[in-house]
Image (tube, rainbow, N blue to C red):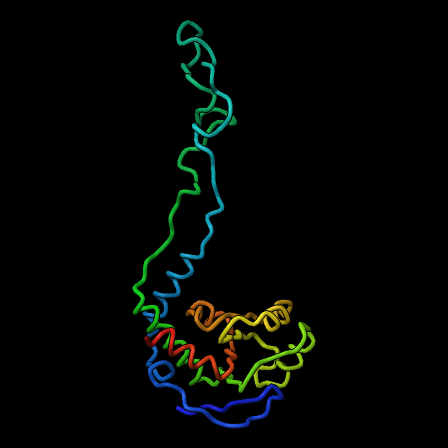
Length: 209
């Protein structure tokens, strides 16, 4: 499968052949859904937490004697029956939402999403992506000249490039990621995928070996 290669000026300068093993895989929505659900669950942060009767403060002394008062017997003010007492069956930080997915399934789903990007003309391949200074303005000028403009885009870099990362971080709907860290959830969160041509080699080395 051939795809156009653009320069940073947005002009088509050549074409390159994409590896079929990565960019020509039939789409299976069930598999992709399963992988995305697992990745979403694994990223979930457990914030809600209520204290049980063993965690709230106070309650060291028995409120009143066991018998003779005419009132119900109580052993601690930390009981859930009391105001400021512990919470029964409330949400806690100990909850686990993580799901395990085999590596082969994650890799296959990734290839499916990459193939879908190509088929829908949402993959933009560049001969190179470099800026001399860490300037958001420079990054914006490059993006405006590409077919994606400044729309929702994920920039996949073949290696760590601090200039690109810092220049793009203040742009809304634009994120950067290293190719070796590509995954279904991030790809589906953005409309376009922008990659320098060197990223294809890194993709092959990372996911086909």
